Length: 332
Image (cartoon, rainbow, N blue to C red; front, side):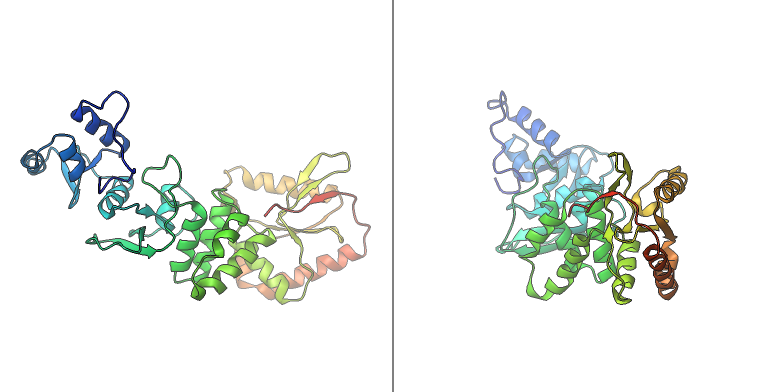
């Protein structure tokens, strides 16, 4: 049936002979939304629907989609209404999919971003971006509205954002939130259009290094531009007896030097995290590491000062005995 995001929801067990019960189940599964075609299939006549909409008992959300109720329309319902209106396997993608997945630190947009098949010719809705594709993926399981797999959604968002920095922030936020990993993004990156490959490749390279926030990524660029040896980013460090010590933002294990980005927000921490950060730095120093820390603002505004501090710290590390620690690189 056109307009249904499931291939064919009939029959539901136990409701084959009761259209009204079937329609109630459709509405339940679709956040209170039903298409005109589904209502007709469930026995609702067009004049009944028109009267209930006119009286305010139901609300029309799209030309062929009705909310069975009079309450306010949520963001999730608006996205699903756009999917139902588009028909033929349409999926939420890009920033819209990440918003529905509640991924934090992402620059969301009011428009709804949908993936549709190349043959899509339906009338569009205001505020909806329709991206035609030859590779319409299967939706994520148990997601309402139906949503593109996160690796696809992340790269769809990265390709469309005007700012390269915002694109990097989206990818970093998705990996930090663990909705997808770097390996899955790398697989999906093989399918991006040629014009977007340079941007996506730079993002994948950055993520593969182990950085997990924009300040860390900026710090990495300063390190590489200055010709300093690249550290391990976010490794796991254990004491000789196997006790976990820390996971510093950057570590030069051969010199016993660690660098920290002193920013609670970029790691989604609680109000007590600043005290935890100070305690972690104290533990690292007690284990023999040279520890330096930077505010994100300084990394952004004073790259030469940051590099100078790092050079001095690495020089100090080169004159000291390297502590005996077990270090595991971050998993991509």
